[in-house]
Image (cartoon, rainbow, N blue to C red; front, top):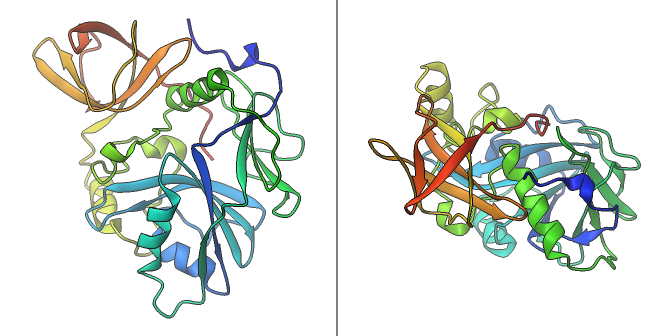
Length: 289
């Protein structure tokens, strides 16, 4: 049985694992363009995109939604990553840039299994003062992500689990700390989300990403795995001939799902994780921005 967001009503619920960071100042957009893997310069104010920050070797440190609130303000919404550690690491690259990096403890993330009232696709709804909303919908259901300063949304474990499972079903890896610095954007199939650019200028890891893309050396990507019991990030995925891949993200709700990095050409069965038979499901489209 698949997670069905439409089984929930439109009551907002807290997404406490999503945290916000702002980059503000005259050089905020230029700084982000030089550090992050997607094309910030081509992102108009009032819109958002998936993006991330890489190591010099092209490994993903963190994935996030990047919102261009206005010409001099960017908002990063990080699922899972520790915002304090992330902001401190990013601060080391500011040098003389006119940009302030701030972990926004005053902002909270809320989820709604329902359509946004103002936002559409990449267009933001609302303002930073009144609350921002993003259209996080995809095939299989409407979702709204809200960033607000005053939240009364309660904690609902079932909805939080369904939100994470929806992310995984559509190829958005929710990377725990154990899986950061390990995988390239191509290995995480982030082209499906349009989360990185191979045409923009330099950024950390850009040479690895571009070389992999233009030389056709992409050999591994994501597979969606479903099991009868909870799946554990870090476990190996076994095929008939031994280890086939590695589980990099997992979520359990009404279904038990994981994303595994596997060879692009691989057998779909028999598959096992920790001695238990599992199945491969088709990744769903629609979460690209």
